[in-house]
Image (cartoon, rainbow, N blue to C red; front, top):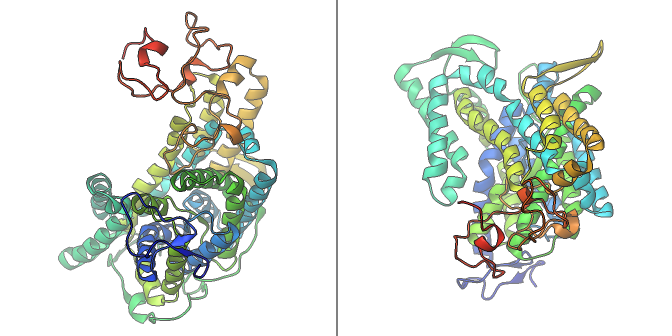
Length: 536
């Protein structure tokens, strides 16, 4: 045992089927290299989202490293994960700023959300994950994730895109092309590569076409300016702490949070998205490492909440576990938490360079326009992915009607004036309607509609690709459905396809896999044995 990790073999050579467990490590030279790979994986999103939220990217990078170390210690090094900046709060932050909120109000509201997330983690650790599914079934979770993303469409249209529409268009096309055209790791960091391309292209446009006359988000008006302004970079020192917030000089850095109940309500819906994201990531890690982490799910949520509280208490960005880094583990099959400690320490060192922070803060608005038009759409569509992976049946009005209302309220930024000084609007109003209307509809719905709705019983990773059967969640999520390849009794086949069978398995809830006709499944049944009359 060396500093808590067991050396894997000789630390240098791995066989084709070898994996490195969380409690193991390779040689320190190779571990440092893997840690650097994790830094690159999380880097783009971790500093792009602070820029979008108007927070300091240098501070965000530093606090992400500190939050990651805290996370690993709380989960006892059993769940290898990196905590980068969360995108779930972007919509709430935009709403806070639209109502005159300051960066201190932003971090104060998010800090309270971190406390709520930590409390949810404690509750799940005590009560079990099945309770979570009853309160937030997949249809509700997917709707909340969707409305958070799609509510941000006006931000792209009104803030980022007008700053340089042609750079935005080129960056958007480049990100799309790289995300599908590049293989392996490069495809996973297409957002980061698109940002680099847009940054360089903006500098080239300045040299070729000169200054641009367009909307300037800093001054909130149209003026003539350079796309890339490095005056702040030249003045920034190479080493030092992030700057303190100075409103007069328009500098956002470290600061103490301020609290406003109305602003807190605007960001609380993001907690639902974070719960979905964390649960899915824990399940993904458990599947890869072949480890039962169900008992650690509450601890992981608690740790993420603590990370957000620590980061925002000094003006940093909210945190969440990153799917990008889970992808790195999947490709390398090295799950050592030692690599994550290296990545965290590296992020802290980056955070001690004001020069680095100034370069990031000088990212041209047009570049952010091209990136956000993709990112915000992806956030919204991840909600649809949750529905698909959990087989949510929208032929069932219990699933369809309540969430439809909530999504439109959020996307249209509809408001409800509660008192002369307080209004619910956008994401907060839409989330409230989605959750409460669903449970009201469920209380009024007949038994057969409730039974059909119960066919999907898991809050799935908003960034992952894991359905509940492959992740083995029947036990802790109370799912009554059969496994993916288990034959279904013939009871009820001749009736309506919506008829419920005696074993409580609805025909539409049965997994339809891609096994060709005539080819045996793993349980020995054939496609024709289950649905011989089905035409493919």
